[in-house]
Image (tube, rainbow, N blue to C red; front, side, top):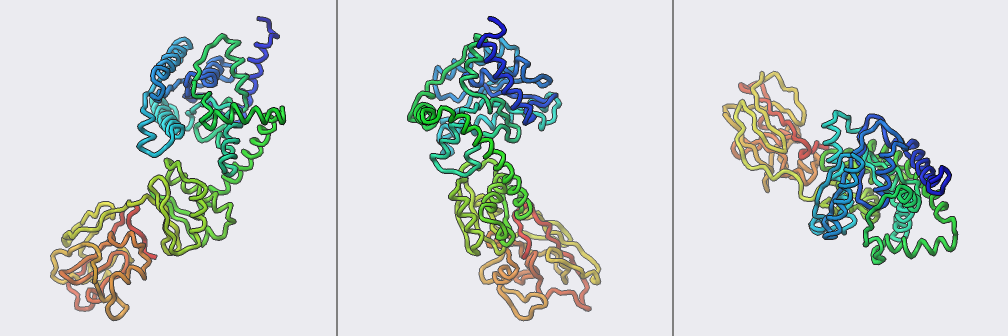
Length: 481
């Protein structure tokens, strides 16, 4: 085969395209580990051969991961064996994982495509982390290389356009997302096949790619031929559109993430939006900030769609907003905030327990209560730490607010229902049954974080003073408003 044969030119052109894309996005850092997802199809086989050729770059370690979805019987077994033998020929480390994707889809209410994608990326992240740890490579220098081509990106844009989405959905197959890289993002599918033919390299064909009852296959085999007939340069035109949308979406995403950091607070299993601050944003930017915060707090939540985000945007202006969301999430207004959290999460109501004096009582997720004797002159306090006249008590009882509870709040005069005290202190309803109430027999001594009782204030006649301190737990205890 001569130097200037069509095949050698196809190989050179493809390598140039992939090298340029890789360099533009720093996809393959020197000293890093690149885990290539290889199904055995033409695109992933071509990507592996390109990376192993050295034409795209060197200085990084290559590993292969094949995920057997157990969906296609003997064909799935043959795919795995094909990739195994290819890796043996290329002398590249091979890792295979078998996973029942159909069962995962059924258990989680997903279609097979979504389920397979979630499984692949989760397994790839876990495998890459393990490889980096063994090699002593910082995880941020690891990459997961997937073989999406320009054709895949065009098909995805058309699918999302038909289904309805924003700019982020249209450019969902970005060249880089976190540690996931797509070196073939600017390469045509036909060019990858020409490259493999030039090498004499076989690949596996998935018959489901021809099944036009599937949306992607229908777009590929029915819609795109019509568009190419209307405009023979439609691929290049859509590629330019993708480039513009990707750049603009990246800018807006950066702005949305910044507002999410400033206008919301993310903690494990929860995100709280400041309603007043969010109201200063335009509606499009509110959408961006909400999406960014939700992605940070719940990275595994995959079914938050446009209609849910729109409901949350509207909910920011309502003091009584509440809505269930996909993936077991719930949003609700709490005074000046809108909270998104997992439905049903939180600590159970507190059961009666003894707090010895002095002593420490563990309240699990709610935190702990500490009782320690102090000098009666030490009366400094905060909502979470008060000094009370303990008299001759050897222990207090700690439990939750009870129906009908009343007390004489220090400095307020008269009695008041505990329920009203909690509302006045803006303790969210979901935290009220986990707010510790310290009792001396049937008398309320202190509603932790809210108010102590008048009867237990320090006076000149106090002989024994005890400081009660509530050390809040990690997320189940709300600060008083």
